[in-house]
Length: 128
Image 1: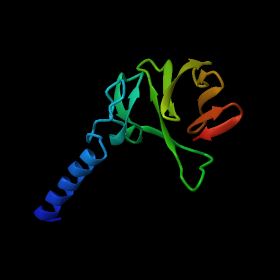
Image 2: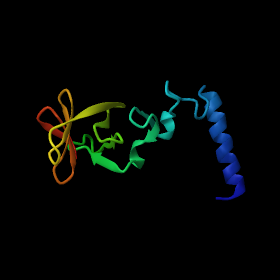
Image 3: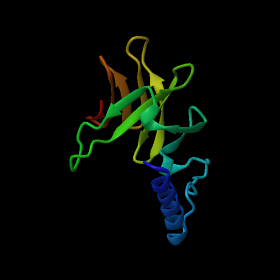
Image 4: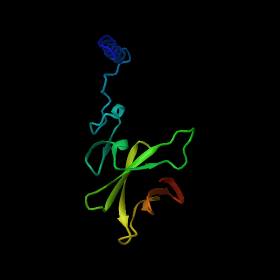
C-alpha cells in the first residue's frame, strides 16, 4: 500500500467517525476496556484482556449459523478460582473436589478437565 492510499484510508476512518458521531476508540466500558479493539475486563487478572490471546481457549460445541464462538479460561494464581467468558460477560467459578479431580463451579456452570478442558451448563457441554 502506498503513502497516498494510507493517507486516504486514515482520512476516511476519521471522517466516518465524525459522521457517525463516535470517536475512534471511544467505546470504553466502565472498566476502561475498549470493546471495539477486542478487550474485555478480567475480574481475576484485574485488567483488560483479549479472549483470543489467552493461553487456554475453548470452542463452542454447538455453533449456530456456521459461526463458532470461542471463550477462554483464566485461573487465579492459587488455582482456586477460574474465570470464563460467556455472552459478553465473565463468570468466576470456585474450585471443588480433590487434587486430580478438581472442577470449578458457579451455579449450573462447571469447568472440568478430562484430557482437555470443557465447560458444562447443566447437563450440556457447551465449550471444549
